[in-house]
Image 1 (cartoon, rainbow, N blue to C red):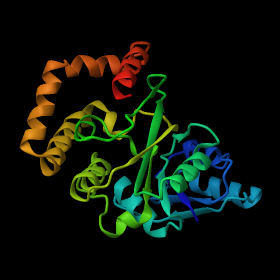
Image 2 (tube, rainbow, N blue to C red; image 1 turned 30 degrees about the vertical axis):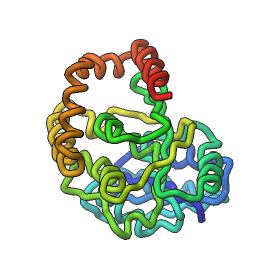
Image 3 (cartoon, helix red, strand yellow; image 1 turned 180 degrees about the vertical axis):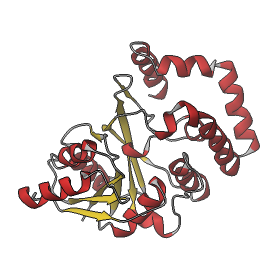
Image 4 (cartoon, one colour; image 1 turned 180 degrees about the horizontal axis):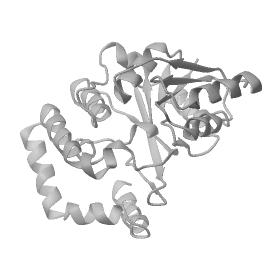
Length: 267
């Protein structure tokens, strides 16, 4: 099996059903859906189970409900249960950008020799715009803004050497990505498509967690990047008025113009 589409959840309500139904629209048949639930009590899992039993979708949908230690522990547990060569994490409320994403991704994987990590662009609903990623991941990209995990495909075998570390409450996926880039020399491959339709407004984006996010970013980058690399990036943030750029990137319609400029620089 080529891909396991993982959705982790806990009391997700109708968002769980919405995400699974949308994933089932993919025009690709070499994948499975794995729902890793943390012991929900809102009836969402039972509702999904009933739907699967009644509709009998052609794509396998497996539902595992057991207590876990939060989103990153749940993701680790899901990978252990997955059968696919690659893992795609699609959170409740998020969805694939269109029905051809998995088919195009699998084709790109075969064309490039099945590399360790693939990534694409993401449509951010909060700003109403596609945020484009560069064709190449560089140390600067690693420092500033890596692809969100909904836009990535990870080889399942990576988890044999490295797990998502739950001690990072917000940046465990970021730390995982930087480990493979800096420590193991993995160079992610750009897919050239919009992979995810990202809901936004999640745990890491709430006001009360922004300080924690900044702290974990500092800890992770200092762990994997050299002092010279960090000094360069910090200087770049000052010179290019990073707080202003962040404000522009998060507001419509300014975000579209900002992304257009970034695309010209990236390309």
